[in-house]
Length: 343
Ligand SMILES: *Cc1c(COP(=O)(O)O)cnc(C)c1O
Image 1 (spheres, rainbow, N blue to C red):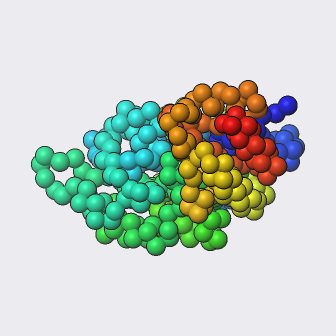
Image 2 (image 1 turned 135 degrees about the vertical axis):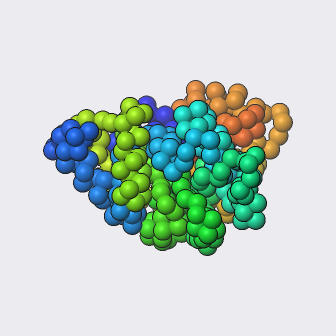
């Protein structure tokens, strides 16, 4: 029996339509630029986000690093949120490989205070590094899939432009954000210079992320992708899945959001968890155990024995992610198992 896997939306399996698309995709060598399926995906991603060009990259982590490499020079500083994926979960690649110093600012629900950003932008001074980039994250992973308001993104972008700074968006789940806002994804992307988004999460593709931006940006990014070893050959087998993801998997994301909200409500009802169902806007649920006597890691083990997988961030903090391979019924089943174990 397959487990009910709430660890991440990265665990989603390719759909039958994707498998079929992979087997039928026309292929070429993408390093020579002649894989027609990759070219079609890159054109579609750029068009959907309202940017000039895009680039297929193996992972979101590589996409973010390429964006930083492309926007900055070694020795510069980038401003980012202190619970952002780039700062916490990308093995310090921007420091080690791009040679960029991070300037993390606290930002509840992903929103760094505008005045704090403004203060953090370095003035001209012989002692200081130059600020080279501002990065945002939408939806914000650590803040439980929080969505940045368009108005906020607009203000950050205006500030950045007034200081001649680029804005990169870690939009791993930008389509979840657009779904929650009931807006076209372009409306989010318009307040950025570049966006990375994942095909491999809620959109269900097995592998792949896209980096989008201006044509000049993508030309340089392509070179950086090669440098990092991310120039893939008959990558059309992956791009074929990405095309299915963009054409058919975006429309259903609201189901994951409804399921996440439902899960938060049901967990709250058990009396063992503190959740905030009204703040669950997308597909991530943060849940805190309400008593010291239970330990999240022990509980996870017992849940796994009963066929339910999730992640814990500390002894009290769980993270659940909903996606296409977990149904409403399975969520009810998972809650029943929690109830059983905690009784
Ligand atoms: C998953 C994720 C990434 C990186 O994706 P990988 O493809 O796993 O490298 C980047 N940013 C955020 C916010 C993510 O959730």
